[in-house]
Amino acid sequence: MRYTSLFLIFIAAIAATASGAFAQEGPPPGDGPKDERGDERRPNLLAELGLSADQLQQIGRMNQERRPHIREARRRMGDAARNLDMAIYADVVNDADVKSRLKEFQVAEAELSRLRFESELAVRKLLTPEQLVRFRELRRQFTEERRKNGPERRRQRRDRRMSPAQDQPLRRAPSQ
Image 1 (cartoon, rainbow, N blue to C red):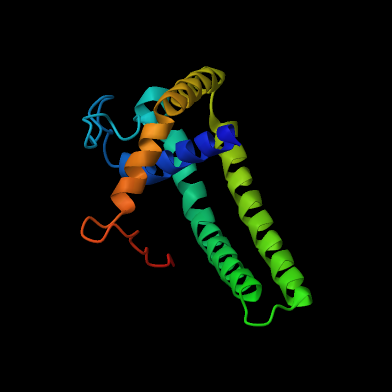
Image 2: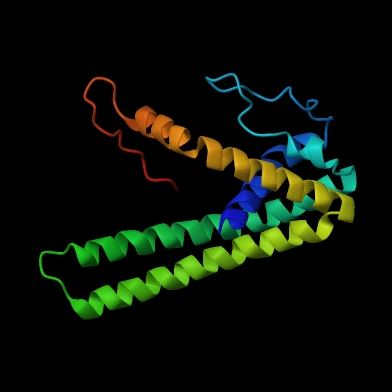
């Protein structure tokens, strides 16, 4: 599961920067945005892996083709989660309805996972053997850093979600 999360971060980083990379070179490593600690928020994977212009174009095309499918799968999963929640916490619980909603959620979750893993595999197939070795090393470093900084980062995220005036969690708007 950790590797899946790391690869998803990799794909997200590429997706976020691939479209801009067609027009110009990305910033050199180390010139990424800084967070409140002065650390880079994420490594510049494009520069670190040395993806070619052709690889960037292929990834950009794949992301553009998959984006509406993933967006729709996320919407269905969110709807299914809300429906399951409503069935569980209804005034009168109907076991058959809960089971039906759970099945609906599981199907939506499986579809989203399938799309994500297909995306990961497609990107993985584009990497050269050297890039794959470098990616594995970056993933290992990321895992170590995350393990080392995990509790502190969770605390910081929790603290940012708390309202300073009321010490109550802030409600996030539903994503669409």
